[in-house]
Structure formats: C-alpha cells, structure tokens
Image 1: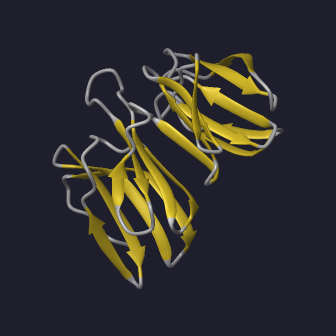
Image 2: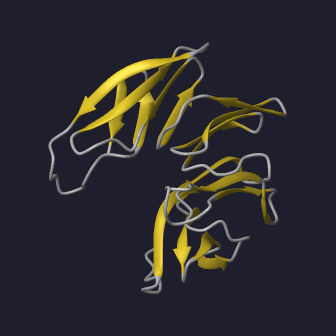
Length: 193
C-alpha cells in the first residue's frame, strides 16, 4: 500500500473501503487527480478538471463524490460524481470544499463561498450556511468554518435545522496550523484537526 507519488502530486483526501480498496485525491500539475488502490496496484485516474480536490466520500463502491472548493483564490472548484465506472462533473452544485455522504440519497456539501447544499432523495436544497468541513449522522451534524488566527466558527444540526454552535478556540502557531477538518465519532466525540 505504501507508494511514492510524483513530487508534483499533492494529496488532500482519502477514502478506504478496506486495505485493498483505497481512493486518494488532490492535485497534480494544476489539475485534479485521483488514485485508486485496487488489486495490489495504484491506478492513476485523470477526472474532469475541477482544480484541487479537497475531499472524497462514497455511499458504495459504485457511487462516490469528489469535491474541490473555490477557496476564494486558487480555482473555480467543482463537484465530481463517480458512477462505478467514470468520474463526471455534477453541474447541480458550483463547488464544495467538503462532502459527507450518508447514503446515495442523503449527501451534504459545504463551501466557504458557495454555501451548503443537501442532496436528499433526488433534490438539491441550498442552505444559507458557509463552511470548510461538514459531518452529519442522522439527527446530529456539525459544520466548521476555515476560521481566524485562533478561532473557528461552528454550526450544529439537530436533525431539523442548523443553529450557531459558537466559536472553537485553539492555540495560535500550532504545528498543524489552523484546524479545518472534522472527525465525528458520535454527537459526544467530535475532533477538529
């Protein structure tokens, strides 16, 4: 599974079904890039270009999403959909920095500039929220923004609506820079990295 990618490859996202079925994504030479580890080999996939891919998530081995946010400066961003065979651009959402797939019929997208979209049962609903990362599980969810020098803003979902979750404070100058990614185990165990 260990592989030395080219020096011009920057990987930001990973999704693993198992140690024999892994997807990673990012950017190579200013273009979107995806690698799939299957059958003991890394396969390079050049999808339609949406710029730097920031996140990747799947509902099954035949249904996945990769997203590139606008970031406000380096790309127009976009959303890619995987149908089990090929990656294609989804024109319903202009861009997203993060995606959280709960099922093929329940997907959340968030971007600092394009807002929040919820794909539910075939319909795209836009919400008036911006953020950097999103995690939703059933009746609980959280959004974090890309924040300032020592705080990031959060929003909390109760299964029906989003409310202001307040600010999360962190120490400036940490080795990892400012927090921007969520890992949610359940509604009592949420980690920001």
